[in-house]
Image (cartoon, rainbow, N blue to C red; front, top):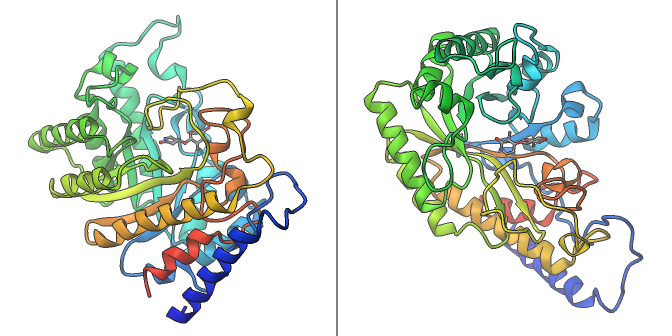
Length: 386
Ligand code: XIL
């Protein structure tokens, strides 16, 4: 897009923002804002040489039922993450009974399209099957048994996709926002070294895959300090960690860009690569949940928490687009440290943010709208790469 085109684009946005109250449109459920960026260029091509642009795929997309989303994926993204189908509860719901069908398909699609394939996630307290931590009588297993189960799980899953999956979230969310250890069953049964063991098993299972620690609230200073000290201890102990994933479930007013930048710099300063792994931007009022992505935080639905059921006001759409642009400006500034930026979904309609931390809301968190049209953020991101 030429600079003159940008001026035209902004004039149109401004004009529509001003005229909107004069010409109210018939309300339909979750109508998209009238202003949508024309898809003037491919995001992945514009960002080529900077970092991969990834998207998380849900089961419908992986199974091929959602062909419209696939068209967007192929045009704009060059990396994929499985939103759910590689999590332990899905892939090994009972001990030794692996369900690989969708994960196989996910990997095959990535190979066919020549995309960067990221595995999410091996060791995580959430969406882990209960059997993992208990014996046949329902009692907690010993440290030895849990280590063996971790090893079997990692060897089987990572080993199956050896040479195809380029990188893995080996451990997800091991720390709380204050930087202390989450008292997960892994931590309680094995102790702190479950993290190191997980990394060692993953490296043994595929020596060529890049291995990452992934977490949310990473711009939070206490969490940043906790992650830095955890990684330093892992490095001193010789654990094979290659990078740090910053989930990036952000809002219009949190986290602060400055704090986010400090974390990118701090993590890269450990000699590791950094990824933004689960980017989405809620525009909805959120009940107090600390600004992170604590999966267990759930609040009852209330109408005032769901103000944009019929449509998103242009002012909010524009604020979200500009916020996306601010974050991408930061990512581009640090592109030498950042290897991948992954959106947690393709279009607004499928985003988990419609159901977390409050079920059944209408959110607008991604780069493409419910009809798979690019939102204003796409053009603003493209404008950074001219
Ligand atoms: C979410 C998925 O998007 C949802 O579909 C699922 O119901 C719960 O998990 N942190 C993570 C992701 O690491 O795996 C989570 O994904 C979002 C928070």
